[in-house]
Image 1 (cartoon, rainbow, N blue to C red):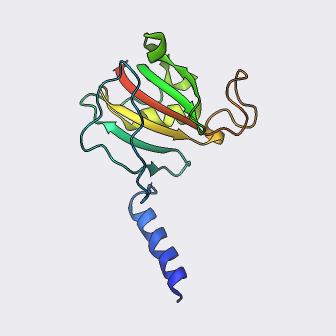
Image 2: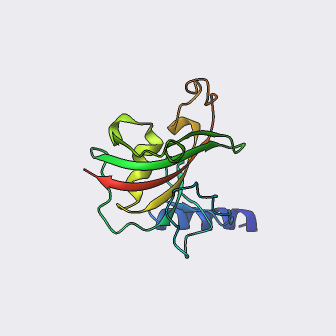
Length: 157
């Protein structure tokens, strides 16, 4: 077996042994936290984890409370930007948190918010198929856009 094939097999074995979750080996600097955001944990990961759907995430602050389910309503503060760094929406800028049902938002949010506990902070990298797809949104988010979010989970109901 060639080294390339061996590396591929080893990578797939790791993927399946880890429950279908891929951990990126590439370090990515932590995002600049918006004004009003709480602190990230000192040991926050420098790498993203990818789920089988393609969502990438890293928990920047471990929550101590319950993790929401897709049927829960959550209250969050969030900051969203595109690959080019352009911010398209931020509850921090409005200085007002927002509450919504996880079944009422894009699939990347529904999946991602279930990965952090109340009081936690998560960074999400949402591929377009889990976001707004080919259509984009509101003239602010272009079609096929990868969305980036920093989210603090304030409450779960």
